[in-house]
Image (cartoon, rainbow, N blue to C red):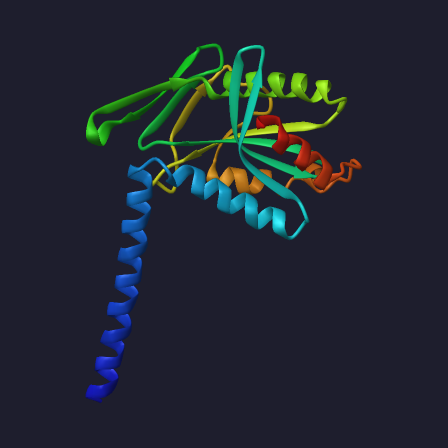
Length: 203
């Protein structure tokens, strides 16, 4: 009887230790600013591997003195998906018409301002298309997503003047977004060739 009690206690302690280590690792990554990107990267890699898609990270774009970096590019038979990863604790406020958005963390009395991610994504797409036209690559279908990652399971987002298809989403919404039929459609994209061309843009 005592042996079984000790065994149960041992299992509970191990489970608590695993949960504690997971939480500490998550907190460490978040404090370093890496948690958002790692979370999105993990989702994209799992999605891509079963479909023979490619995931490119930190794609550098340079043209006419302008520079942009795309956090992730998913290259599939459907076309391309550009993804920006944002992380922040607290409530998320944004207006499509405003150049700056903010995270407000009431618990720590902190407010963080940052560039409007929707407008920034538009700049990335525009610069990318110009670069690809120089390589005689046209008519690539491009979708976009801005994924907001938080330590909270739900991220309060207060957005205004957004378009019909809001590209700013939580992690949960992003997973559902990837389930859309359009990402399974075959638009005759040569995944390997396009991925290689995109990777060469920063060289």
